[in-house]
Amino acid sequence: MNSVHPDFQHAPRDLSHDSEILRVMRDSVPDAVRTLNGELLDIDSARGYARLRFEVVPAFCHSQGTICQGGFLAGMVDTAMANAAIVRGKLAVAVPTLELKISYFEAMGPGIVYAEGRVMRWGGSVGFLDGDLKDEKGRMIVHATSTIKIIRPKAKG
Image (cartoon, rainbow, N blue to C red):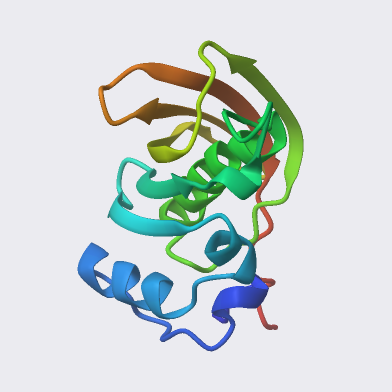
């Protein structure tokens, strides 16, 4: 069974431990995550969970560099949710977003944010995710929910 996710097509097939999955994911960081200054910190494939750290830099901000533009924050929390789904599928699935809802609770300027993504429901072809962005003090900056399509490898036959 090969992965249908373009970033993990060449990953080993039998990744049984989260430490192996985490290593592969850290070795295959997409350019979009690099651009957002993201780093994958922790995963739990059984739960469908991922935690990342991002650095908001002044280039992401408006209002004279003091408030991060919402699209960057949306990209960060979407990345965490997508990573949660990818690890739930053990790197074998692609998980395009069908719907994304973002709620902004606080403004965020330059600094560090932590993103957590969680699989809430894992179905045959559709999944439901949620995620949060918090600053270093633990303040909730963003909460999001997402609906994804789960694209699995086709059985050979």
